[in-house]
Image 1 (cartoon, helix red, strand yellow):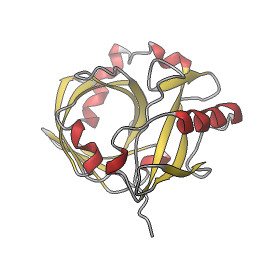
Image 2: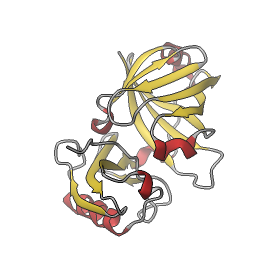
Image 3: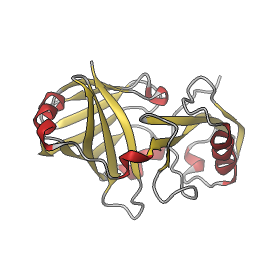
Length: 212
């Protein structure tokens, strides 16, 4: 039986960012697409994962599926004989320029260390452990990921990608990711936006993280 692995796929034609801004979600929603790659690097069995997809707009769901079918993926020959997932993000438009109020920034110190999880069905089994200088993510379908973490402000931090366990992700080692907490939902959960800063592709990703 093929093992199902995870791949973050960036939207490149719907919007200049890695997500689409919409007005019919409260925070962030996703469309998750399942697919497999055969021994020749050809994709097949492409379909929307109904259980993991939280964005319900049928037009955008089908648009995401068609976009993925027509798009091209790098490193397909490192993905052969496996099944994967691609994720399309849909974010409330108010977060385009949203910033965390200054009076809330000290509260972010509670997120500097501890154990966390992503509030995203595609990462539901991934657990993140954050120490003073390291952030380690493992479990689920993305393999083990090791980052050096540096807090540049109470609500901002930088991740340097040190180690990726999946062969297809090795090229990401050395990437610098700038992360900003832009909203605190409750004492355990925050909304963030993240951007790779040392890459030509300046896509921004939004998501929710909860301390556990």
